[in-house]
Length: 297
Length: 280
Image (tube, rainbow over all chains, first blue to last red; front, side, top):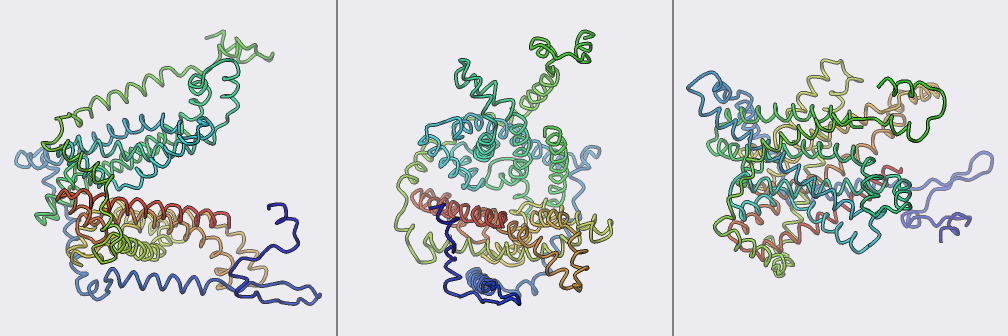
């Protein structure tokens, strides 16, 4: 098939070009070139149709935005005037309760994401090895595991957290479980993709002087994938802090509970304080992990 | 140690034993890493004090298992607004509109946040704004927007468009910074005017990147749109969470089946399109 395509004089044109015949231009030296009809109008029409249908289905209206848009400004204005009592508690006795509440929630969030990332990433490594076609030659196992990973990745974190909180009860344990599942799906996928690109020469050489598969993998492949693996772990930790912050909304512990509470009271100044604390933590962790990841690569 | 240094500076080729003796010894780095990780884990171990299952935990787990193996097929193929197909379509509609609006809004933001185009201080201000938008979780955005639009799918659309700006801008800025400006000189030499220079020199370089970014974000937004339903912002999430709260597991199974199928289709589609864009 491939041979005839490259050797044959005329490549079969795409369906679109067979319906809308390209324009032939004769140059001054007698050669002819063909200018295909532009596809842009068709794509534009398609996009406009999709947009119109979507706008209808979702009830999009500029009127509401213009009429009630000032509400957003009002709420954002209050968010940007955070309630400082959540931070003053360190030195002002009267605000201690608020600060303690915020700090406990914040620490819970961080603990959940560290624990969840660690366990999830540890479980992901052996599965990733089993999923890579260059090490595991049993295709059915590879595909079964890959489909399982795909399904895990498509489930939204909040839904997993909701399941976990129904089964394990409200609290950080459920949140940690949700993060483990989520991290496992992502890290395993990224890892098997990078395991498939490693140099297998060393693996074969080690096998050839009598090491079993595990020994060969440990001494020939581990050093190659370890930096990538650690950097994926750090990356997933970064993502998990953000994710863990909202898990509390379905009762899985951490900042989300507090966020849910203050929004319920329409106390947007306190919401601002909670978000500010989250922002600081995310900023610190992202920068630390970025520096570490740069060192790893 | 002195012996090692002599070996390292010697001109003759080293024997295997000598080279092995010179292998990098990083044991103290490894020990440090392990100690730090162990300390962090010890500290965060208190997060997972397992208090046993919830009072009905095992029963619920059984129910979930049962629901996933016996999804409500009537609901799965029901074409009315309560059915899974309509809910999925609405979720996709939210994501499409949200991504497109976000993608368009991100264009001015990213040009204004790119220090190749505007003065440094302007770029810094806009970068801070983008970072601010990105930090607020999408769920919080949805809860704020609900006060403006009411709890419906429209809320989902505006939430998605605002949330998308952050990440899309980050990738747009990278695309703009990678633009090869040497081509402008050649177009100048060929006698092009300003408009032609943008049309034939700049746009072909950035448009594939922009479209690829938007499609990638669409992938994420569909997933996000399913969770926004939890706070009442339309899409399949609202129905799903209601069924979960009232323990109708076969309906949960039907919604999850629909959701997983949709996500897999979209992932395959977006990977295909982006691969084609990358190869040109």
